[in-house]
Image (cartoon, rainbow, N blue to C red; front, side, top):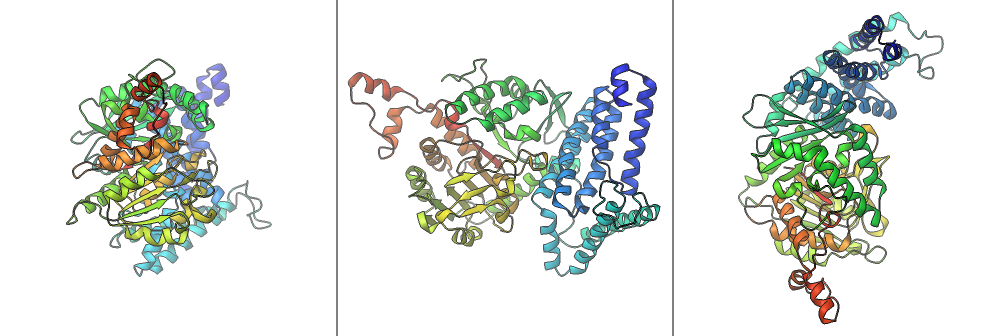
Length: 582
């Protein structure tokens, strides 16, 4: 009926299709029936017709259903399928809410999807249940598992696609399973309320509110960025304002996908060309209207959804030329731009940062430095960054070369409040939980291993390649080493969006630690270091780092030309690193 309406424009078909989809979605939510893509199809079809209220209804029903499905699925693949719809439904719902003028609901629904996806992908719910058991409430944990397993089994009995799960001779639509499933779902809701009543667990599986989002914007405004089939949207959340603002963006979903694919698939000289094209497109497609809307602020936090999480918005370039020029203006020239996977994670990071500042010293004091773990097989140039980092933190633990094993690294992580990894990074686009930092002896510190660790760090610096690159599957769109360090206890993370060049990274990190002074936030220190690297000449580099930068050509004229050259003006050299968190 939806296809026939799209072809013929029959209003009767539209009414019948809407009634059918609404009935299916409501029944699925109320009774727990499977609903593969039903709400997503309805929301997209409604938006295509400009029926925004209907698109909102579809997105809300779909989110309610998928949130429960994610919690109660027993098979990882089924969880991922449910989680994949969360992000997409939340973006469709946010755009539809904005068209209706309800920007508060738009911000809440997109935060709801992003927070749920990250929590599920990094399996935070089992970690919370582990804490609950440690708190002496193993009875609640056992009841929770009993309910979720029973719901998953009952839902499988009602799903005609699960022939391998259903017991032999059991009808696919057996009516006797409907009421038990409803009772189990209601019992699970009641149990969740019991868990929230336990001290320290008030936020367990609690959906975000506008108040939660506004609290995350206490120190600097938030800007959600999203794209849909109908257009792009920025939702701005500012302290003291009753409701979020919204800015329509000319960036389309298709163009955003192409830009992300171009960045991920390029390397070598092609990567420089790709970055030139991408930074120019991001200016007109997103950052120019956002910067104009937020012109009264000196800093904002960007929360990009979906494929936008791959893109370097801080390096959006105000030029129509496909290749950068030395005098180009970039977004970070005008404003400090940081990132966050969602408002909830940002609020947790901000609490850690405040806790760090409330200490007597008010500054991080102890550094763990992982320095070039593979000097024989894959050596890195780390002399300048290590000198600056160790000078900045006299109290440090330095694991160099063969000393930097996974066991020793994990042993020291909890005891240090600044973590610096100068090593190689490995990104797994299809299985981001396998993304890792390479250590000595061919060992890998994998993302999923990190999730079993707890730290209390003001900052984690991941001076390695592609440490801020997420998985390409929708269910993993915000899962990377950067977000993992935030979740396990870092207040802020410096990480990279592509294969960063060795020599430029060495200099950038040295400048970062020199810029990170008493009253300078680490995000501002990174910005200053990036501006410095972009504008530095060979002569100035030679004077500052005589042991790192060579003498240049010997001839008089070639040497004079070389001394005045700015070798790192292209954003490939300085813009690869982002700051995520507080």
